[in-house]
Every structure is written in C-alpha cells, then in structure tokens.
Amino acid sequence: MRELSLNVMDVTQNSISAGAKMIKIIVREDKTADTLSISIEDNGRGMSEEQVRSVTDPFYTTRTTRNVGLGVPLFKMEAEMTGGSFEISSKPGVGTKLTAVFKPSSVDMIPLGDINGTILLLVTCNTDIDFQYTRSLKEAEEREFSLNTQELKEILGDEVALNSPDVVIWIKEFLEENTRELINQ
Amino acid sequence: MVKAMKSLAELQAIKEKARAGVELRDNSEAGTRVLVGMATCGIAAGARPVLNEFVEEVANRRLKDVMVTQTGCIGICQYEPVVEIVQPGKEKVTYVKMTADKVKRIVNDHLVNGNVVTEYTIGATN
Image 1 (tube, chains in turn purple, green):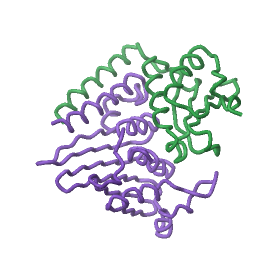
Image 2 (spheres, one colour; image 1 turned 120 degrees about the vertical axis):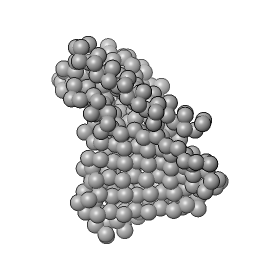
Image 3 (cartoon, chains in turn brown, cyan; image 1 turned 180 degrees about the horizontal axis):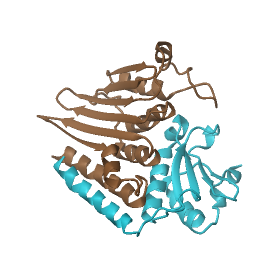
Image 4 (cartoon, helix red, strand yellow; image 1 turned 30 degrees about the vertical axis):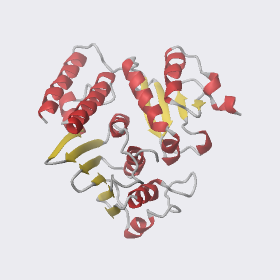
C-alpha cells in the first residue's frame, strides 16, 4: 500500500466482518525511540489458535470471492521490512488485537498518510460500531488526543446520526485540528 | 483535550439545530445508496479518496436521502476502484476505475440531477 493508513482501513474491515461492536485504533509515534506503532483491537468473534497462525499466510482467507487474503500479510511485511515487528493475538468470543511496529527512519518506511481520512470513513460508514481512535506523539514528553464515538453519540442522542452532514464535517475538522496541534506543538 | 471539550460544545449546537426541526432525517431509509468497494483490491487501487470525496461532497451538499457506505470485493478487481449506485425502482449503476475527480461530476449529474454519467460506467470501458 502507498500509505499505512490504507492498511489500517483494510485490516479494520476484518474487525467489521468479525461482527465487532467496538474497535480501538491507536497510533503511537515515539520520536525518541524511532518507532511508530499501530494497534487495532476489536471485540469481534475472534479466531482460534489455528486461524491466528494462518492469518499471516497470503493463501488463507475467509472470503468467498477468491482464495487469497492479502490484508494482514501485507501489513506484517511492511512493518518487518523497516526492521519493526508484528503481533496478533485473538480469543474466540472475545476479540482480536494486532500491533504493527515500524521504524520510521528506515528507507523502507511507508508514510502514515491520511489517517484522518481513514478514521472519518470508518466512523461515518459504520455508525452502528463504536470507534476509539487515539493518536499520540512522544518527543520530550508524550501528548495525545482521542476521538470516541460513544462520547459523540451520548451528546447527539438518537435524533442526529454520526453520518449526518453537519456531524461528518465536524468530525473531519476535529481530527484535522487536533492532529495539527499534536504535530506542530 | 482542552480543545476537544470546546469542540464537543459545537456538537451540542448541531443537535439543538436538528431538534429545532431544521434537519430532520425522515426518508433516509428509502433513498439512494452509494457503495464503494473497500476490500484490499479496492483500497490498493485508490478507493479511499473516492469514498472520502463521496462522504464529503454528499455532506457539503446536504443530500439527506443519500447513504454512502462501503462494500467488499465484488470480484472485478481489475476495474477497482468500483462504485455502485443503487436507487429504488432503477437499475443498479456500476462506475469503474473511479477517482476523486470523477466523484464531483457523479454527485452533481447522477445523484442530484438523475443523469447517469455513462462514460464512467463499466459498459463504457469494454
């Protein structure tokens, strides 16, 4: 993929297909340790030990349109190419968590890209699922911001959906503003 | 987080506005559905900017009976990004090799004015 944020979009589809009701996406950048870590955690139906082992194999997929699945293997490869690491753990009936750690100084590093675009789409196209998005940056000290759709839904109540025009624009601006502040401070 | 609190207050205002009856969602069930293929193939081919553009364009134009959503791989990966537009009582329209630039025209011509942009459809590429 051209941007890691596209991998996030892609891999999160697995959580959605697994019937998750809550998905946590955490992007942590640590300038002092030269790491960028991306975690995706869901409370979907989870996988058996055997499925977890085979999920990084490109020739394993649960899809029926054809028999290769590239989402997870690609993400893992991209992390390992930079000298980083990849971990996935899952429990049937509980959920799945995966973490990819990248080394941003590597020549093989793929840029994070438009992560806000990814989050906006995940939130507004899956209004029945709750998302918790956290982005942090550590230089001398660590700062972070979060978007929690449960919080938004509490304010909006039943009358206004997360994908109604004004709210879509609000979420877009919220993400942009907070990201700008985090990076430029 | 201080800034977030301020912004959450704006969200409250959006709700008040809706409650005042300015923006009631009534026919969201019956309307148009825009389906963007977001499997690995679609995303790698550039589907996300296309979906982003649909979501933002529909929001900016306040099109309330249009639902933009994502779908999986429909098996024509060579034509990705693929967008399907489903409207009640009409035949499904499949747009292929989509770009964010094409989205504005499709929203204007097809969604607002009801004219299919034939040159972007799958039939035109054969």
